[in-house]
Length: 273
Length: 295
Image (tube, rainbow over all chains, first blue to last red):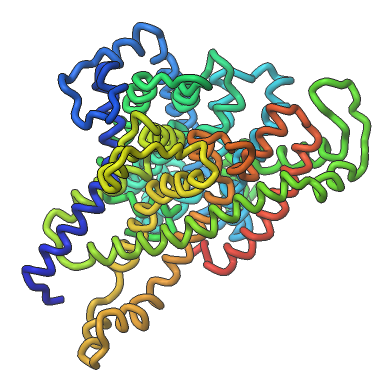
């Protein structure tokens, strides 16, 4: 479409306004984490920290609060690996042999739609009996189960995009089914595999309701820890900001690496970017 | 076994062998909770007594006349009905802004999408700091405009809690709509638009009659995903108000949480869980068929 310099300038202006609106809260959070207590509790608020200092982060390490980041990392990593492994196998069978048919595929994805509070309630009662409450194992198992439908659904889509002729020629050449899967299919879909793993990881990393109910102290993940800093009388502003920043920046970096898969990843494969 | 039969057997074993480990794990969330909550909902369990006798539909009857439950349903619907259209329209306008050639587009999109991948509990906490009546920048900005000190208690005052929560919610999820709609719009064949404009249709007319019908499937899917998320809204409100003041911003999920884990009304909470599952299954099934989610 034709556009004059003026309309282009106007569009840039509007884009700039949108960027300010959507990035300002993130900036504010990071800014607080770098402020001194005096600057945090200045009224009216100070917009730019006077001298950058990392004391607020140092306190997190000194008090041992970063333990909750470690918990998040362990739980999210292991549950992602297991879900990717089981889910991709299942997706391959569904994509190539139509195992279970459309109804099975629908059932799989519908499990992702159940509100977490409805799932976590009976799971909590079960975990009490198993002694799994406040253990990382309990969270890992639940996150694996909750992420599996997403992994299966996404990987089924990526595998369906692989031309079946590739596999047929490998089978003719004497490869077994499992070899075809490992040597032909997996390399072709590695981009989708990686993107799906990152989204699965981000979900487990960001999740709150399951962690809120199923942890007390030992297995607390970082989102739950952040809510502990809000007190009835006063809030621990420095810790809130530092812990939130610490838990958010890695996610931003991970997502920045997979722009190409972003649309497909967040739309559950329904929209291909 | 003959060669062919053997091959069929091996291939069958392979097919199902690949599927069952995943299915077993999914049953933990897909079958066990429904069966278990259904059983518990007909019993009379709380965390204090030893009584586990079956009570028939007692808890379901109680549910019907529980004003707090119906209010939580109403709150959930309010968030859904206000936030969803706002996110859709803002996301669509934002997407239109990016449609033509715009140097630096990729970087802008990458930056705009950051709220979506932020943990909702962190997003809510961040907004709580922004809304703080003394140390937050929002009251400060208001005072710039009005010229006098602003002391709005955003997360406490009944008049302002809904706008506060909705602002945080719309901030976090408008970029999601934007991303999906931009992808949908980018796939629209430009020659169609040009043909319409040659025929004398203006920009908005072309958009309404040509572009919109083409991206309708994308809009429906984006709305379905967001509607399901809003239906179980918990995190943002928990961070901002914990359902307060009083129970003013309590959603169904928050009420179920409070019942189960603060008041320890195990069986009653189970009854609510069953009602949520049944209602949601009906809606989801209908919606999924409509939008042909399975491509």
